[in-house]
Length: 252
Ligand SMILES: [Zn+2]
Image (cartoon, rainbow, N blue to C red):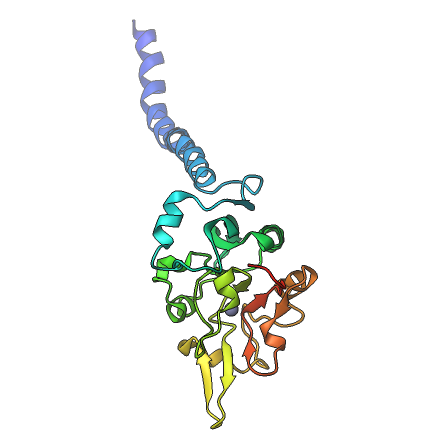
């Protein structure tokens, strides 16, 4: 008995605290890892589920009923020039200014739907920064509001600002890219300058350097030009740096 107690007492007493202090943190760490791992896997899945994969994005479909209903009285008004069947609904992945992947929505003319899905896919693959791609209806189809919010968009049934002429956007044949950083600049006859959106005066001077500036070196410029679009930044009457438009004679 004495020998047994000698064996038990001196060995177990000093070793247990050592075991406690040396191994317990490891077990805590493993236990924490065990708890967090499913959560980490789950959150990745949630992110993956929230955004369609590139394989299922960049496709053009007829305008769904829910979208069409929301457009009424906002970006669409009954008119003889452009009908529902002339339009297509696009879901586009894009990378925002913070590098996050986002899902955008766009309405365009069916005549340029393939151009736009190819262009925006190339921009996404190059991680070209686009702050947001939302429907004009999110801004009550108010062009100044969506430009101030730097919204990239295409279709909105409206006239050219300051005229009665139907805009190329009214036919879904023009796209405005990052409009806050690429404003529309018009010199009036009295010498004053109209900047749209009104909060973009900082970006009128195109000789300075800032993010999202569209130039002839820019990837968006090169892609749109290669698909047969013209750039508003090259116009002489006014400079519309955000604007790419496809001229299609006789196209409704
Ligand atoms: Zn435009």
